[in-house]
Length: 75
Image (cartoon, rainbow, N blue to C red; front, top):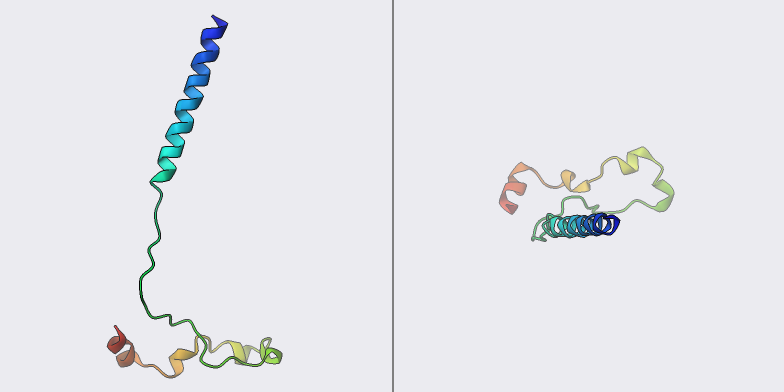
């Protein structure tokens, strides 16, 4: 009887492991698409100014040069 109980528990563990591996195979996927990266600096401040809020806070810098019409044209 003890052997039967051990076999059942082992079989259940194997079934649960297979079910878990099957579920992870259906995880969400990531797909790369072409786009416009708007989070880039046009000109980097010198390393000595990285601690200065006035040098860092205008990030992303593209907002200085592109307006709403320009962004709509890029779409």
